[in-house]
Length: 178
Image (cartoon, rainbow, N blue to C red):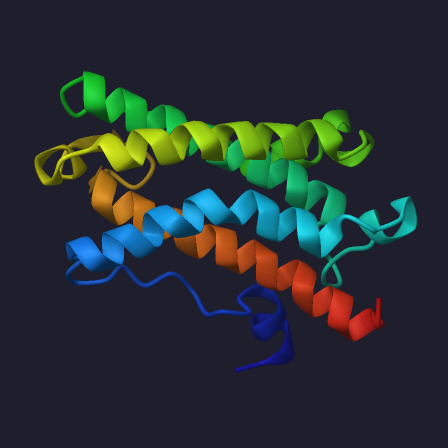
């Protein structure tokens, strides 16, 4: 694996698990619950200069990553709610790369994004803990992938997403000796 690939995918690309039993589901819910605090502890003493450092050459800055996480996880939470209240709804994709280039992602302090992440994850955790196995099988349709995703698999994806971007920042921090 090349250095660039390692920097892009420090924990490897997402691979959907074949079977997500209740025990694994519980660990996923705990990961969603714990992620905001884990991220806060990783970046709480970062300066603006550190926040404006790309995690790899040609990659997003830490500030953009934090704002991306807020955007992405809010979208995922809404997709969960749509799937729980509609019959296989078609979700609205968005261009995450273009969103990361908007001024709120590039220039703003990260506190509002961190509050969004914390609040979204708190609500998401309460929702996830309330779901039955049958509800976790509910689906939404992703038109770009022309595929239906169930909530169990989507939760696995977002736990990976948490760990994926956390590793980007953690590896940068280690590499820079921060």
